[in-house]
Image 1 (tube, one colour):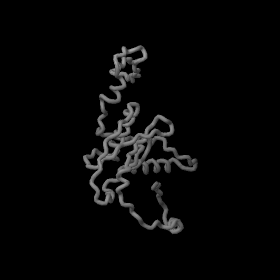
Image 2: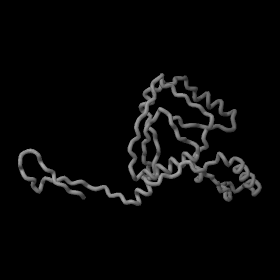
Image 3: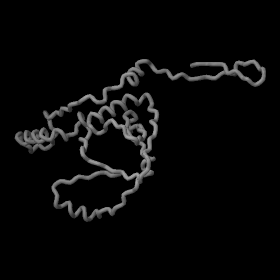
Image 4: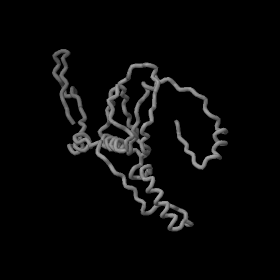
Length: 200
């Protein structure tokens, strides 16, 4: 705790014992700085994810050994698109172009927000993983929106969000007629596989 006297310039009164301000120090060890600030991780280092196929989690006792072996072969054949604890991110969709109509507005560049020290290491690790997976890339775009760190329910892990409020205010809304759910359900009977997306 640091204490200093506050001298008054009004009148000739001598400072008394009550004329002081207390500043609570924020003590951070050098180890904290070394871990979180001094050494930034190499965000572009290559990574190879190896999935373990030695014990596939198949809970069907009627499967024979040859069926399990074929199951392993199918998994290995599609190794690049598998998601596990080793690569818990989907593969990037290369070649997909997404145009956003900002109605001719000039680019908006917002300054970065301060990230609490306690979240910096987790943020660096998260960015490192996203860069390795190819889901984000370094950019020199004239558009820039700040990131926002949101704590997950466990109070420890972080979720990386981006504040696009200002960009969203400029974006022209694409309006089109939504298909009827009954029509979609009727068409589903003709397909063996289908996927669903949460567009919220």
